[in-house]
Length: 162
Image (cartoon, rainbow, N blue to C red; front, side, top):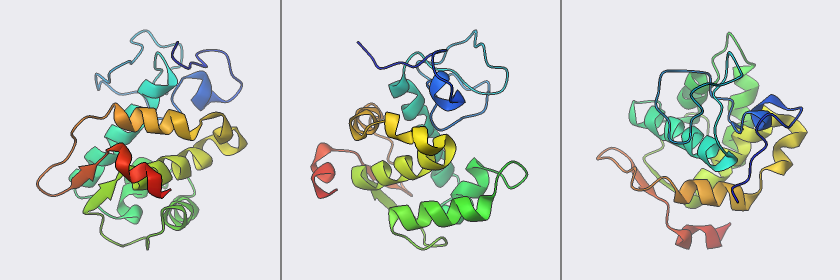
């Protein structure tokens, strides 16, 4: 049975199965609940779909030229809603890159670190309820997301290096 916190958690990102706190859009995410009870944020059938959507959103942003942690987080968590400078510094430190270092090749291990860093900011202490196994499963659900400008390797081989 898929892991779900839907409408059953005090932390909004978990209650929505949306640990990245993706705002509501007209994007037809897989696993998206169309008749959401949250007016501002997406809701997903289970935690894996929410994590997968977060990863797809991040990878799409990198492919659109948001190819540094600074550019990526400015897009993902705009300054008018967040302390973006602190967010950027936390994420860059967590993934082991400089804030303005270009991201041109990423792997499963990097995605694990990136996802964990973002949900730590988004969920606070509740981030521990999203396990590494949950993150790995969502990464495995991505399929081939590489493009000519960004190589994304999500095979399990890279997880052994964590």
